[in-house]
Length: 370
Image: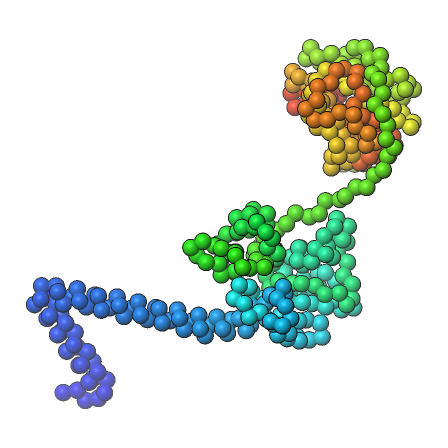
């Protein structure tokens, strides 16, 4: 006989178990199937009710501590003052289920210590405040001014204002984001990952390219001169070449191998520098097709590139901005292509000329008479 409540409970459950085992065998499995169905229904109800209670109570608590949308109008939000300079805006909309902080810069702050305070990268703050760090100079200067307000998401990544035509795929492509992490942080619908109705999306650990320098360079407009007397002065791979400064107004130019900064200090580059005070027209060294014109980052300034055929390519750097040819255009040896200048990384008016064959840069003085 059971002597305490524990023994009574164990005895009762043992009797129930024997009953169902008996019925399972006696009914040749019918009772077993019914039991399985009942168990499945019970489990489904438990899961459904748990999920519903989580959505009602869990997300409500989460929204109070995490949700924020600085794009929401003041009438729809509450402002919580945290210290002297930090405000978090708590949104009522579940479309922004993460926190974004407003931080008012104080005396003595730096971008790095602000980032450390919030546990995010400096770049995260820059990407979230393009009105302050959207140019090349401001991005790298990292200046913070006391009194200005910074927008800071709760985790490192890209806070992306959604624009017309944006989709999750296009945003992830632009921000180098992880799909699964972005879906989780933004609680996107599992079946279609829709961002409809949202004003902002947070791409955790995403990134954006740094702004590029914008060059403002004014130059006088020069009409294209006629071709000069550009006889053959050399050849490579059977391709006839002429001096790129064969135009009569280039008389008296000087040349040098030129220097370039590399490992170990200043080194001679494989091209040649042809200098002329005040500049002069630069001519195509070969018959060929123009493959590139315009500004080129990396120090080249205004550039023209010409494919001479047979694996031979000629490159002309540091033009003054007057370019008389365009990509895809055929040119003849001796045709003026641009005017000599000093743009890009340059210490004086000159042409930095490079000759390549088979993709390999070669010393042009071995093939062209200067």
